[in-house]
Every structure is written in structure tokens, then in C-alpha cells.
Length: 371
Image 1 (tube, rainbow, N blue to C red):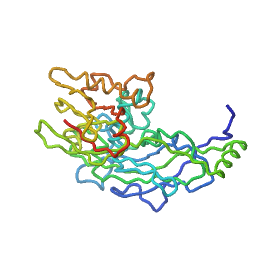
Image 2 (cartoon, rainbow, N blue to C red):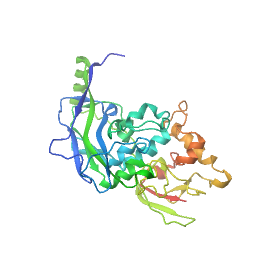
Image 3 (tube, one colour):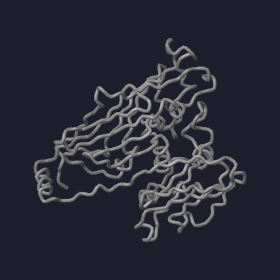
Image 4 (spheres, rainbow, N blue to C red):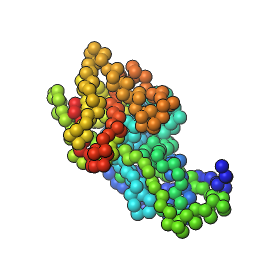
């Protein structure tokens, strides 16, 4: 294969100085204005610097206290809870978007990563639970591959040729501290806040060889069409009424060609300081099935789960085989989580509904989830 790349370097881009990255419920953007560059977004990184502040209750203006790392930590993928939504643009066109990345990207990673230790600097700590991004003064830094954040950055591994690009960040509210951190009850009387000091976007820039550059320019002059094929990670949430034994979650207009669904259930975690918001609950689940367009069910048969009798193996089997179906890869099938940890902390429901009749593939999807 010919050597088409003469140079490959990273450049870091920042929000404009007039934008406040630390404003709860605010919005800011990072733009790559230079239209002369060739970039590879799939290898780009999100850089986050910040500080967790710990004060005595009612003494916010006082001195910060040092942090006992055994009592306070950032949960797995917790820093993405700082954002309610992230949008990606090429030119003036929105290409991809992710809502609630703290949960959405967590579910995706739990089901498809094989070893999260290589992402410990991004805030992943399933296989290395002692890992912490914090130091005792509260400072943290995370380097998060954008391929863990949006479907476009994972699936589209080619280059973007001389186009403006932009990330738009919609900050979560100040209450997101409860989702980002988990604390010991000993800190219940303390005031804790999170300060975002810096957000940046590290983007690889490429210089092609003269021969390859000439070839691309000729293709453009011939009005060659290039496809941006990728899978969007759509997020939806629902609060169910406690005490019900059967429930149907109706999602009236889902994206067409819905192929994979990940479901996580939580009880009392969203507003708890002491419960880990990156863990899930089985909630005495007996069955879950996805129905597309009032027709086909996935899985076809009821699961017949019963946690008290340890009838949960079917759920784990769905989880551990999800990755090979999603990536169409029968070799790298090792799950991130073993069976015991799955039941105790990460009992997510992974449903492969990629095999569909043409009548479903070619229409908008009405999606129902039956519990």
C-alpha cells in the first residue's frame, strides 16, 4: 500500500474566551475554523480539567478542605454527567448528537468494551476500581476518546477533508454533582461542588503526500460523493410508577433501522449522594421484550427471570453476546464484566434486534418495550 500520509500531528482547540465552560445549564462550543486542514475525528480526544471543592457546611467562602479519597470519588464515566447534550457539526450541518452522555455512553461501554483499564484516564474503573482521577486537593484531569462519546466518532474512521467542524456542549445543571460523585455518609454535612476549569478538543491533523492530495482534488472536481456512515446512539429515559408488575414503555417515533437496544434500571440513585449513579439495579425483573411496529418481538420468548432462584443466566448471555453482534466480530467476545459483578452492579439488558423483515427496515419504527 502506498504511503499516503506525510505527517500526522495533534492540535488542541479551545472554546472562545467569552464562553463560560463552568456555567451550569449553560452552553459553549469548540470550533475548528481552518478549512485547509485534513483531520481524523475518530482519533480526537475530549480534554477536561477541573476541581472538586469540599467545604464545611455553611462555610462556602472558607478554606477548602483536603479530600479523603476513600470517602469521595468520581464514578465510572462520571465526568460526562457534566453535560446534558453534546452535538457535532461539519460545516453548518449537525451530524451526530448524544443526550445524557453520562448514562448513554456508560451503557454502551459496559456492553462493548473488553478491558477498560486502557481508559482509566477517561474515568473508567470497572476492572481497576481503585483508580481515581482526583487528588487530595480535588484536582482532576480526564482524556476521553471521542469514540467513547458518539457513534460517529467510533464508526467513521476516515478523514474529513478541509471542512469546518464544531462541538457544542450543553452543560447539565449544578445538581449533577450527585451523578458525577459518590461520597461516604461521613461527608453528609459537607458542601461539595465541581468546578470545570478547562475543556479542550484534541484533533489529529494529517498532511497527505502530494500524489494522494492530487488524487483527492481530482475526485472532488469530478463531484464524487462520499458517505458518512455511522450508527447514532439514541437515548431515552422514563420514570415508572413503583409497585406495578407489568409496564409498557412506548417510544412513538424512534429512529429508523433500530438494531440494538441497551436498557439500564436504577432505583434511588439519581438524587443520592451516597449511591453510585454508574451502577444499575435488577429491580426483580421477570421479563423484558422489545416490540417493533406492533409486530416482531425481541427476544421471541419470555425470559422467565427470577433473581431469588438465580434464574438470571439468560440475561447475562444476552449481555456477553451483544458485543460480537454489534461489531460483527466473533473473535473479540470477552465481556467486560463477569457474571457475579453483572448481577450485583451492572445488570443491564442488551437486546439484539438487528434481524428484521424488510417491511420494518424500510419504515419509521414504533418501538415498545414490555416489562
